[in-house]
Length: 630
Image 1 (cartoon, rainbow, N blue to C red):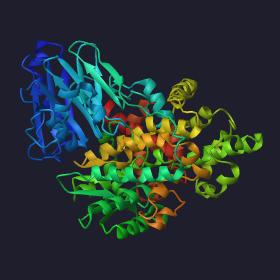
Image 2 (tube, helix red, strand yellow):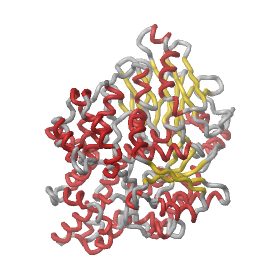
Image 3 (cartoon, rainbow, N blue to C red):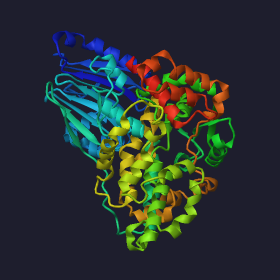
Image 4 (cartoon, one colour):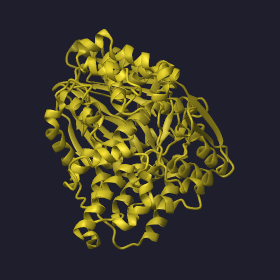
């Protein structure tokens, strides 16, 4: 894990002379991403500058960047990890390539020499990198298939710049701190932006699974090298898929255990992290495995440590716990927003920030369970969407015609998972019952209704425009079953916001986070599984449960109360949080900004239970404006 930055084709001769200084400014603002080393490369003609901050994980002694090939005609800055670097290095040596280091970075350089931009199709890993081919005067940039590592860029028609974090582009003055109103409209609806947009008007993100080629003075050319394909596999039965899934899960964890520095794992009380820790224990033998858990001392609703301790005992890990307080929140939220570059989409970013801090005190690499809910059908909203489909099928007498992946009768045993989600159920069925699938899922993902009263914006007027952008993604990829269209949309959008949090909360502390469940082979397998197998009888994470049965603890496999990482804001109201929120949202700057209705803000803060998702969103939006726009 590292921080990368670069500038291609500076505008003026003076800009070219100042390129080393510009790179230094970019690297300074993202120094937290790479505390171990720093390096820059500037082409002799001043047309290109590359910068790198390093977190040394693979070949700590030999992996200094920017790194070049033997004749220095190819240079690279790289953030991420290519897990199959050893196998690729052996193949490249057999083809005559000579290596000076043991780093996965050098593997990318030689792979590019051998296969050109198509080299990325051979990688198993997470990456964002830029390769400068001096012979061709070509900058080749790439981002991994699932978007685990970030890549932001700015292009003004002359100069191209890129970085791991937006704040580095602002530091370089190649991007301006101006709000993209269309992106803000999307953010207010979903609490994330779609496609390549960011909240900054002059900054875009390279989308997952895409390569970019750019020559000095030319516009970037982007090509997608990987996408989800729903070519359903009807040749195999459920037992075969369970066996295949189990083998891939084990191999995904095996590859991500490769490290030249201490490694551990996040451990909540949920199935995803417990499965990863259990598989890691099988693969590591008697080696020490450290795990890290976060919680709140606010009763069982906010504390999953009993289940985490069960998983830790079974896997014989050295488990570390951290309990977070209201003061931790008020003292850290502004710093968290700065690290995020965006308003924090959900309150889970707060405990994740501190669990990463805990882990960074013991290891340099952690495994995490991100992606399990999207891949294996784990969100309660999936169950709610399909409950409506089942009711519709029962009424129309079409459920047995293979139109639905579950019937009303078979889905009933799964419904207790909805018990804690009464407000969501009421809101979902308030209007639009039995409309087309895109409309129904849009209503589940639309967060604007929660904050409509607080904001003075006219976003509702553009709701149909936002829905059109949503529908284009929801109905893409050739997926026919609703569950696969949901799968595709969430991997393309919602998962990206979670991976953004994963990257920023870990890199804030110089910690590399690896996510085995997002091995692209697992994604491709789950896209090929027939929906009736993947979501058997409406059972959340059905295939994953079967694949790790006998490996993960039975107490966790039997859980039906999906918790996530709830934060007890309401309970902290009497412990100073109310005053903090009031100071931020009723301040002179906030009132002059005009984003929020002061009367509604005052009323909400003064209510008995003020800390709704809407107030959380308003707080983060105002803090973001202070950090980046003021």
